[in-house]
Amino acid sequence: MPQWGGGGEKCPRCQKTVYPAEQLLACSSTWHKACFKCKTCNSTLTLASYKDFSQDVYCKNCYQDKLHPHERNRKQLENKFSKQPGGGASSSSAGAEGGEEA
Image 1 (cartoon, rainbow, N blue to C red):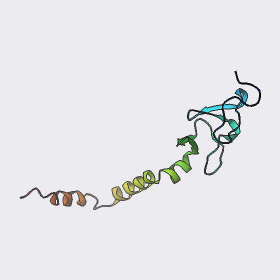
Image 2: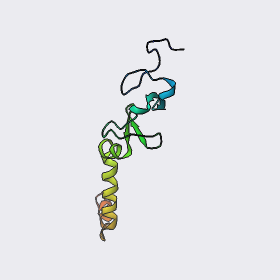
Image 3: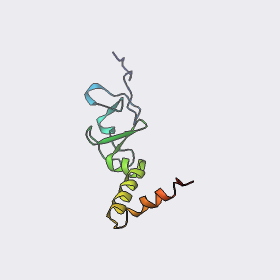
Image 4: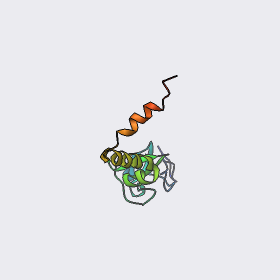
């Protein structure tokens, strides 16, 4: 049992003691409900709406835009090339570069 003077678990955002009435468990840490906000845009998060990275929490938009832009870019490229009429030609030229004739 925690002693008086803040002997309980600390919130990773504000580093203050989190008491049971105000706690929220996420990312293997105990948070204050008021501190459970996106690190980038400061929007309020819920357990269903957050993504975690390096023991911090983000909203889904900031997580995709700032932490994993390659996923967004990959999807944009896939959509761009799948809609072009000559998209299959690059696969036949790739086989010619393989150098199978020797």
